[in-house]
Structures are given as structure tokens and as C-alpha cells.
Length: 438
Ligand code: CA
Image 1 (cartoon, rainbow, N blue to C red):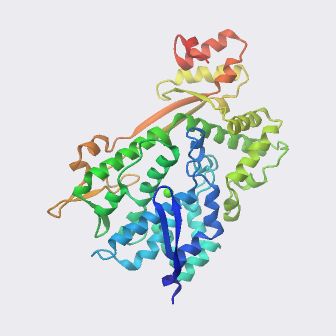
Image 2 (cartoon, rainbow, N blue to C red):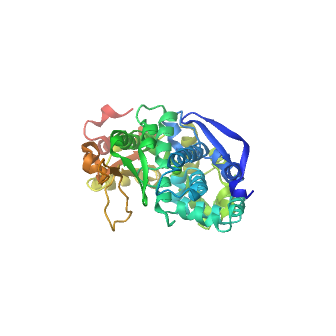
């Protein structure tokens, strides 16, 4: 029997807290899960530094990837006898779902920003390069790894297949919202996925939702909206991320200035040089990063040592609301005051901005075209979701941005010059600042 049709003698199941069970029957899927590249995802947390805010959030990208696979498996099962659906694409969808996050590294967000990396590029490299995953995909058929790569890159010709993995209502989002809600323990983020799966219909090149399922989709959109502001953009999580980014900046700076490390940053050298090849990239996981941060707490460099101590022991920066467009003068004065007392503002006075667009209707030609969610009306007409739902309409196309200014309140509190200290707190917290100092 051809490898692509080979089934396991007995179905394998993974116990999963969100979907109860993840079912695997295809030998190809089972083999992919066993590869070192996929097993590596066990050592990369789905939510990076969020566990410093919500201590339950220790789940990995491995969990999430299996979850996305399982959702796509269930969708395809529902689709299998429907017109518009080409069942030959089944294995392709399952592989793309399972492997869509393969290129994520530890704390991707910070690493990508500091070292100008792109996890999507590395996903493609792992699929197409000299890897175990590549070997398995090419056993399915010559050129299959390229197909999987195209689906994940959204360039695959059959857009119906692409939309299962990435659209405004896709298996990726449905899994991470529920999984992240479960592991953080928050009460938002839950919605009736079973219902949404039952009302999904493949029509031409897109997945649409039977209009009777509109309220389940409203719930999903709102849960996404709330998860972003309550969990993903939580200011304490961002504080940890700010510190993490500054550690990477500092280590890179020291490396470039020939500082003698007690623990040489061997695993980071190609990142500092911004020439990371695949073999070096996949070697880096959270265990390695923590190893360095743990030992860098003993470095002679004050900034690197302090930032690592902060990160490892959750001694985070405090924050205030801050609008960089309106508060430039305050910022400049603070910057100079920090310099004056020997606290380097490049590392200790940091503006962080987060923004999200919860749902968008179709706006052709824009930077990132987002395909809208369509409802299938009883007369078989398609209607864009925000035209039918008042709830969705109210948040559609509205980008919300939040700016915060991060600083080490503990260091400011230790300052001996009372006037400087008072002025800093005034600038940070406004008049009557003493009341806020802790
Ligand atoms: Ca994902």
C-alpha cells in the first residue's frame, strides 16, 4: 500500500484537556509527530512569558499543534461527502495543520524583534530543508513538502484548504483561544466550537457558516477580543517580555564590544550576527535560553546581571499609561533624569505598544487582506458577518492600541537625591505622585 494511505493497525489517541482526545490513524501523521523537529515543540511554550502572570500557562506549542490537527481532522470528517470538497486534499490539510507552527523558536516574539527573524521563514526551511520532516513528506509523494509549505504560506491554489489553517475563523485560532483560556484559567475564551464545526460548509474556495450558527461565531469573535486584552496583552506579561528583549539587546551589545563573558554566548553568536542557519535555529529551545539567563546572573556587567536576575526571579518593571505621541516632553525629561542618576534609559525606560484588530471586513488592496467570515443565509445567499451581527459590527475594523511605559520602580525608590526622585515620580504618575510610590 502507498505510504500516504497507510493506516496504523490500531488508532492512537492523545488525551487532551481541551478536545478530550486527539485521534491519529494515518501512519504519516504518526511519523511526523515522532520527528525531532516536531518533538522540539514540547520545549517551547505556547505563550512565552505569560506564565509569569497566569501561572498555569505552561502549555507548549506541541499541545497546540496537536489541537489544530485534531480540529482540522474533525472539520474534514464533517466535509468528506460534501460537494465543493476534494477529499484528496485530506492528508495535505492534516499535515499543514500539524506543522503550521514548526518554525517557532523560544519566546518568538522577542527573538524575532531583536534579531530580525521570522518564524514563518523557518517553518518553510524545516519543511523544505534537510530534515526528518522533509524526508517523511517526500515519501508521501515527490513535491508534497512544497504543497504543505504553500498551504502554510497561504499561496496554495485551493484557497478552501488554506482557509482551514488560516482565516478569521480557522483551526489555529479556535485551538489557541480555548487552550490558552484553559491553561490560564480565565473565564473568557470559551465558545461553542462543536456548534461552529457543525455549521461550517465548504463553498467554492471558502468555508462559510450557516446563518443559524451566527451566535456561536459572535461568541468566538468576542472571546478572541477579550483574550487579546485580558491575556495576550496583559501589561505584566509585557513587562517580562520587555526585560527579555533587553537581555538579548544587552548580550548582543556586549558581544559586539568584545566583553569577556564568564559564560560565552555560543548558542547566540549566529543570532547576534543575524546569520542564523537552520541547524543552529532548531537547537535553540527554552531550556538553552534559561541556562544562559541563569548563569548570566553572575556576570560582571551590571546591566546584563540585573536584567537576568529580574527575569529569572520575576522582579519585573512597573508600568504607567503613556502616549508617546502626546508625552514626548515628559519622556525626554525622564530620559535625561535617568541618565543623570546612572540608570541607562536604553534598558530601563521602555515604551511598549500593543494593538489588535478583532475582526475585519474585506478591504481589498490593504497591507494584509483579511477575508471576511461569510454567513450562508436560508436562501443560499452569502452575507458578510458584520452586516448581520450588531455585536460583530460594533468591533469590526477597529484597531485598538495600548501604550505603556516600563521602568524599574525599585531602583527609583533607592535613589538618594529626593528632588530628582520626586520629579521622576511626578513625570511618571502625575502630580501627587508620592501616594503611588511603593
Ligand atoms: Ca498556531
